[in-house]
Length: 82
Ligand SMILES: [Zn+2]
Image 1 (cartoon, rainbow, N blue to C red):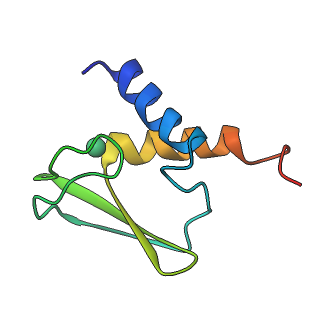
Image 2: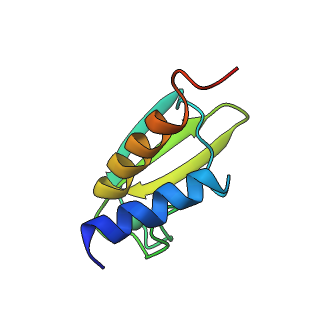
Image 3: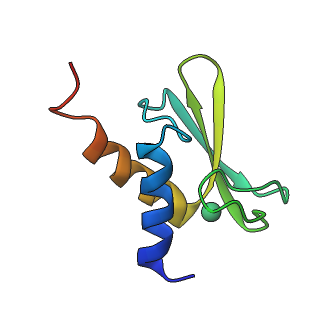
């Protein structure tokens, strides 16, 4: 999967509210345990980033997927939210 189609996939999930766009309260970096990424849905066997969101929700991403999610939610949120 190319980088741009991966970004489109994650941005689409944010638009459809499959992925939340809340600002994370905290984040952890660690070794992936093979659980699927919330962005691309592939297992994470390398470094994973976990984000703690409001409401005790945990998101789990590959490093590039987390970066795309942050970019997508920045476009979704700031300025347009009422
Ligand atoms: Zn991923």
